[in-house]
Amino acid sequence: MSNVSGKAWDTALFKRIMRYVRPYKNTFIVTAFLVIVLAILGPLRPWLIQYTIDEEVKNFNADGVLKLTLIMIGVLILEAIVQFYQTYWANWLGQTIIKDLRVQLYKHIMSFRLKYFDRTAIGTLVTRTVSDIETIANIFSQGVLVIIGDILKLVAVVGFMVSVDWLLTLITLIPIPILIIATNIFKKVIKKAFQDVRTQISRLNAFVQERVTGMKIIQIFNREKVEMSRFEKMNKLHRNAHIQTVWAYSIFFPVVEMLSAASLALLVWWGTKGVLAGYTTLGNLMAFIMYIYMMYRPIRQLADRFNTLQMGMVSSERVFKVLDTDSFIENKGSFSKPKLEGEIEFKNVWFAYNEDEYVLKDISFTAKAGETIAFVGATGSGKTSTINLLGRFYEFQKGDIIVDGVSIRDYDISELRSRMAVVLQDVFLFSDSIYNNITLNNSDIPEEKVIEAAKKVGAHDFISKLPAAYHYDVKERGGMLSVGQRQLISFIRAYVHDPSILILDEATSSIDTESEQMIQKATDVLTEGRTSIVIAHRLSTIQKADKIIVLEAGRIIEQGNHQELLAQNGHYKKLFDLQFKEEVVKSA
Image (cartoon, rainbow, N blue to C red; front, side):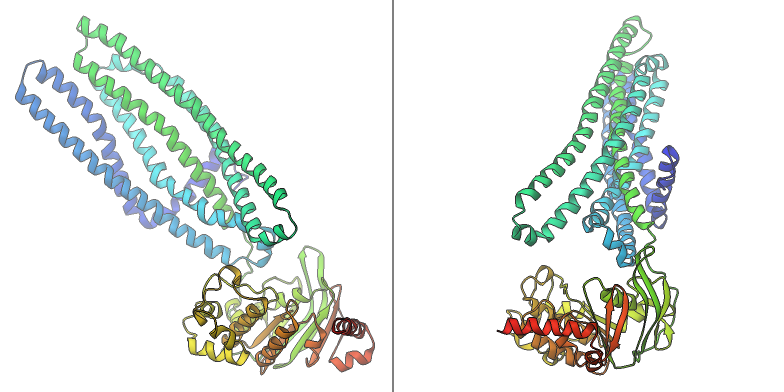
């Protein structure tokens, strides 16, 4: 889209926005009709005043004046009613369209592979989903339809003026070419200014979101002043972007007022001469004074409407850029089965986050149904990358991964992932109840099942002591609970979803010894009867594993059970001896 230039780009973008009107075309047509009616009713009042003065007042016809006055009041009431419905339906249309667009955008974002979120600021996506889409609503409520109405009103005003006195019309329109030039210049300046405004808003949102999320780190390392200084600089850039729009307004509006005053001066000069000379009337002069106001007001508002339209266009460009992002794994597979046996085979798998920078190299291993496979190795050796491939959260480049004899690329992704459960090292809990965090709002999981699972995992005692037990709100990211408690909740979450394949990603690396013992018991419960893949930091937690795979620099260098690897006297033995010595020192 960015390769399309200038006017053609705007046209293409606008056409794309208007596609979202199609489901509501009847509402759009009704609203457009009301806009046309308003454009006619407005200029009708000065014409009635002109007729009243020149025909009824001039002939001292009181009944005629009363009759026309009542007609003008009726026109005013009708105009107010039409204005109400036009405003209501235009805003309804805008809000309904962005509701649909926001759903589409959010659904699109939900389908992105994790790689996209690795390189995109969360605050930026929040801006796209909330404020940018909200701005698009103004295209319909304050933009395109109202612009059409203003243009029609201008045409109607000029038409009435010509029908009343064509020569007087030409005189009053003399400043209009200057106004057209000024409006074009203003349009270009304000478009660039509002693009900068949206950019600065996005950056500011991303900055604030990241700093609030990481406030603990900022305070621990005493970085408040530094981050405050950076915020002030970004806030200043945001202010300067807005000042550019204010500067454009500050010049344009006085220019419009001056040209309006010039038209009025020309009208008074020429019209007064015409009244005195008899080639125009006082009614014409009074009507033209109102017509000038009606003509310049839409012109000035057109600039405002155009700004609104430009802001909506800029926002829509950003939203469509996300919608046009092809960052999701294609779900071409359709294979599914009610329950997986859990047999897994990695066949010569190569994987890179960035092209040709492989973090996994020729990985091959098998896990029989019901076995527990453990991965060990230094940080960056490829342990987490391996398990990320199994659920197709990232796409491998070479080789294949087989589950129950079928390539995972042949599975429907949703079906495949629904048969797996992952317990991460960094447990994420939503600002919601413990029950909803466990079930993830799945109504098919009753509270009785959750309580039963909590008892088996060993978490029921601490949950039942909380103020609202399973309906206790854990607040953002589970901040009201300890690390060990959050980890136990994640175990219950995995248990109640009854996965065929369980993945534990260093689930005991960040907790104390007492909590580790609880979680080790929970692990035994959770892994029973299902294929389990465990990433271990503490080797003491995986000694019972059926197979231990040692990774180094993305390659498998050893594999076997605990006793076999110790007997090999290789890398695993060194890791075990080193960790055992550390534990002896700590206990001493």
